Image (cartoon, rainbow, N blue to C red):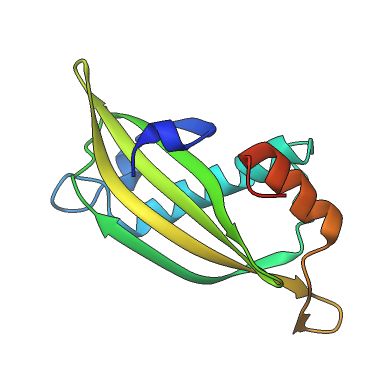
Length: 143
C-alpha cells in the first residue's frame, strides 16, 4: 500500500499512554488509531457531525501487519479507504505511517471487514443502496 491510493487522512499525536514497556506504541493502540480514522472517514463522506455514532455496522474482522515501530513524539498519519463493497460488508483498508525527518515510513497496514448490522433484530443486513453510492462516488469505485 502507498498513501497515494487513499483520499482520506487523519493525523494522530502519540500519547505517553499509547506506549508499552518497550517504549513504542503498543500493538493494541493501533486498533484505537484505526477506529479514530474509520469514524472520521465515515463522518466526512456522510457529512455527519463528529459526535454522531449512528452507524449501522460492526467490525467483523481486523488484520494488521506491523511494519515499523511508532515512538513517542512521532507524527502519525492514518490513511483510510473502502476498497471493496459486498452485499452486507465492506473492506476498509488503512495505512499507518510515521514522519521521520523528511521521510514517511509505513508503520502498519490493515484491513477491517465491516458488517452491516440491524441492532434491533440482531442480524446482519444489506448495505443500503444510498450508502453504497456515496462510498462509490467518494472512492471512485465502479458504479
